[in-house]
Length: 371
Image (cartoon, rainbow, N blue to C red; front, side, top):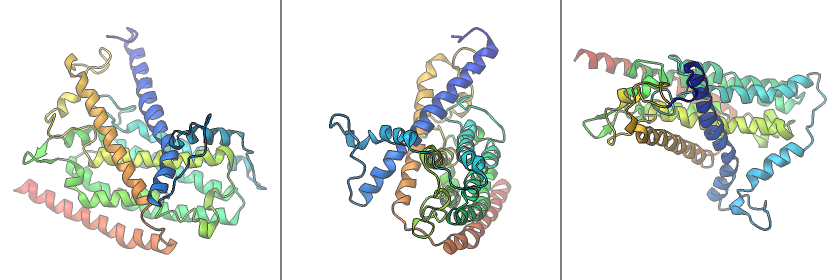
């Protein structure tokens, strides 16, 4: 089946379908739902009720209507701009934080074959390069706020990003060494099958230390508790977004939840086999790379395998959601570190551990190839 009969137009339309389905429906939808889940989850952890007041005719739906009430409130509130010599930079900063967080999903393989918005053979490097740009939004917004508390929060963000960007990059080098690629789709295909018929060839089993380092460093880069020293209410009022209201505040908050989804999706890709389903459909890594969707867009897929595509996409989404749940659990379990503790943890513990893990991985691979 062809979409239009024009191969070029078919590719464009298929790319748009992937963009809408994955980025705008799943990612944006999940980030929006997380604005409610975060508060309900914290209420559950603290034995509270959580958001439950928004209603339509006394119908509350467990607080779900807050997802409608919140954007209405943000759109109708006054967009306050402080007395600053850089008002345009102040207004632009939330977009500088929001757009990079959304763009990086283009290289995440959410399914087999061409189920990836923009297939790149350097996908993980693209994520590092573009994903690190969102810190500029928070830092420049803090500086343009003309507020000392915001400025201190912005300085903390920059120091924290530098500290943990190095460690998270080194922690993932072991994955690249084992699977021999920085192409995310190839890394997923490399995790096909099992060891001894039992243990999946997932990155979390090949690099368990790297998984712990990745999760901790990624949460720290996202400025979430227990690493939320950039917005520490007890110290900096609200940190880098103290002066933001209305949609400026909404964009900064939503970009944080989008990064939560990114951490889950990237973690599922690198450490949980991505769209691979162990034990059930082993040996489909090569076949899945040739699946047939919408005519000749992805050639050579056998027509009866459509259900396998659906199952593998569902497997990827479930793995990502599990890691999102894990982040929320960490967020509402551990207390906030002091700023000096965050810096000490990054430079004295995370970075040396990542280096040791890299050396051990290299030695293990050398002996594996030799014997």
